[in-house]
Length: 283
Image (cartoon, one colour):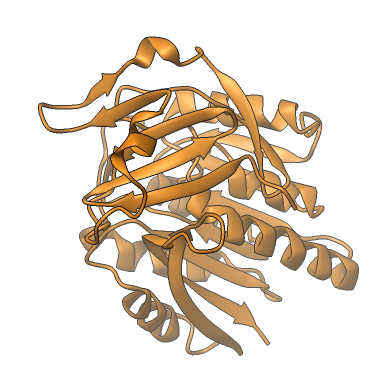
């Protein structure tokens, strides 16, 4: 499957990436090695972003207001934001393919599958699950990001798919879902290090993750399929996430695994670690 994203090079605290026809240089603190390609290649870019004097774009005027790319079989609308984000985290593309395939298999076995996607951002996991045939609940605290994700659904001809679009604080929503006795066959969550709910609720991963996992455990159906946990918090390594899932799901029959999420490019390009993930999968 050809993607419109590639990591061209990384090093010296930066990453050089291609998003369709747009090439960008952005910070990457984890790129502790030296860049491989000469600086002349790094200078032939559409625009750059750094945080040396606050969040700052260079040559942002060279960027279109928005453009679209296809990654892992999903079309995304991209746009430069003041924080340097574009509306996609391509290190998740392996996860999107896995979600789609896992949902498809579960649907073939059971006839239906319901998925909850928390901290859902621009909807990559939501759309992968919908492409696999799931009914999906998409939740994010940002109304703007939920609208962005709905736009991505339309780009993928999924505007009529069974997706519930929710703007809410994750923990408050989960508590209410438990009271409503709603259950899900699969749960996906990518909590931030720090965030705010729609009413200003404070989320800190080190404080809220245990309760979050407990609530998710209680929301799984009687015949659950999986829980996929990922994050970009440096203190949370893959093994830490796996140990959490091993403890929280020890009473359920299944297996756990973990790994690093990577930005990747052509053969020979050093992969760039960009977060961690762990999965519990029913057996």
